[in-house]
Image (cartoon, rainbow, N blue to C red; front, side):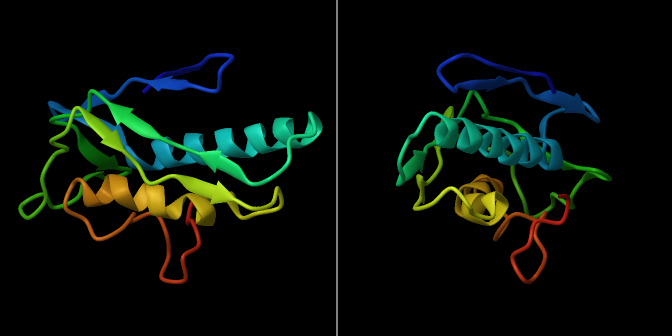
Length: 133
C-alpha cells in the first residue's frame, strides 16, 4: 500500500494484492489514518483552529477489496468483500484537541469492517483500545 497526502488534507491510498485478491491492509490503513489525524490535530492547534473539528473519511474505488490482516485474511466463508464504489464513513466530531484519536475514530473504522461483514474493527481490544499503537 502506498499513500500520498496533498495540501488540502486529502490522503490518497492504493490497495494491494494479497493471495491474488485486492486487499486493504487493515492495520496499516487504520494506523495511517490515526497517525494522520494526530498530525492534523497538531497543525490545527498550532494555527489556532478552534474545536469542534470534523473529520470525514470516504473510501473510493473499493468494490471487491477484502480487509487483510497481518496473518493474511480472516476466515471469509461468512464474510465478503466491499461492494460499493463510494463508502462514506460516519463523520467524527472532536470537541477538543486532547483526545484518544484511535478511540474517536473507532465508529468510522468499524464502518469499514461492517462493509465486509464484521461486527467491528478487529484491531481494538474488548475495552475499545486500539491494539497496535
